Length: 308
Image (cartoon, rainbow, N blue to C red):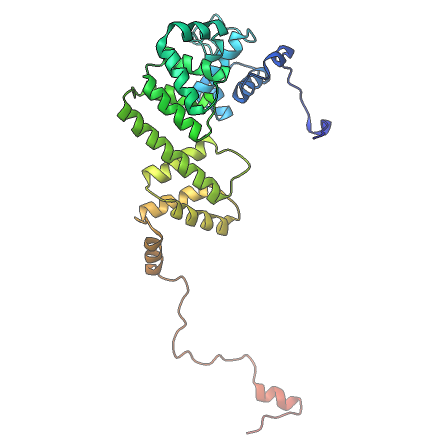
């Protein structure tokens, strides 16, 4: 596809180091977004602030910072608690020699790689090997649990960074047994299934759901207990009222239905049928309306008359 830059839409240029072209094939989109924000802002932001601005997780931001630090594009400042002062290495820092050494000297790592290749039905990519080794070394998860997450990510076509994020959350929550991991995977499966259904129901095909939108969907599904049929009704009411999709408007509709203890379309029909109509009934035996003129008198002046 041919293209050209539109100078009319460009008011300000942000300079990025030309060295990043060396890593363009291995760097993730999140890491590029983080680096662009760092170079475009006048002052340093915390990992939390960057995550909020870019709609990323803090883990994604910190992994991005570790990557650029490993390439010496950014440096850790001397002051404490600064945004770049991260001691834990990232998966991309693992060298090829370290991978080979782990595979030859650690039977568990070798088993992890072999079982993962069977799940992928192909040889692992370098970034996948580094991610798996990183998870094995830094997160206190059993190989069984890691493989369950690998299988989940394959089924939902999730990239290695998503595998890393899920394993990190499990490690933080001390999820390390087969039973605990099964429950967590079941929750994640329901979450992704309902997100997919909502995207289809709301006609969202050209973009990803934002973090806030995912939180609202999770609230409607888990906390409120609504199924996709009620979300579809709320979506239709939203479009009928304001002519477009608005998650905030749909959230208000569903919150009101929850307060009214409405859980099904039948509950909604019963509720609305019980509400009084806004129309005022016409009074019975209403006397005929009086006009402000005498019709007989008007016709007689015109030479006309009303026959008896």
